Amino acid sequence: MNTFSKTQVEFIVQLISISLVLFGGHSYLAHYFFHTTPLFFPLWHIYLFHFFVTTILFSVLNYKYKSGQKNIFNLFMGLTLLKMILAILFLVPLLFSDFENKQADVFNFFIPYFLFLAFEILSVLRILKST
Image (cartoon, rainbow, N blue to C red; front, side):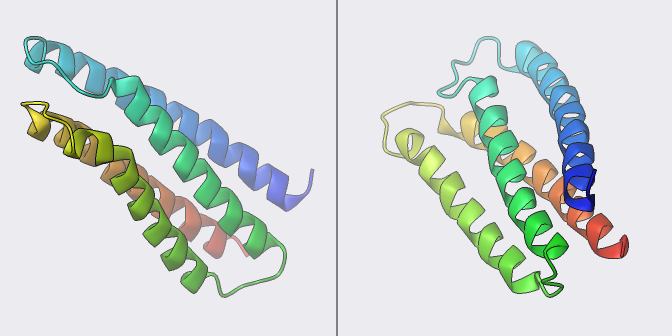
């Protein structure tokens, strides 16, 4: 197995594990703190969004790095900006709705957003240190 595939498989396994742990903990907390508060987005939508965006971003960076492009900082910053734009687009239906309790949904979105971002940064640093 080449280094791209090996790194990619390790990342996917770790991301699935972290996603399940975070989703389980978040679901548990939401059940006890938000059980009377209706939410605009189901938690699984939020985690699915974060999972796919994080996977795509890391995959592009991993591919470019393993293909020989060692300076991926600008690419990382550009993809992170794209991730932020996608996050805003994901939240647009909530922001333009007449839904009453928007704050709970925004917190439910951005807390995992930053946790996935931290995992993503640590994973990119790990591939940079591996060579």
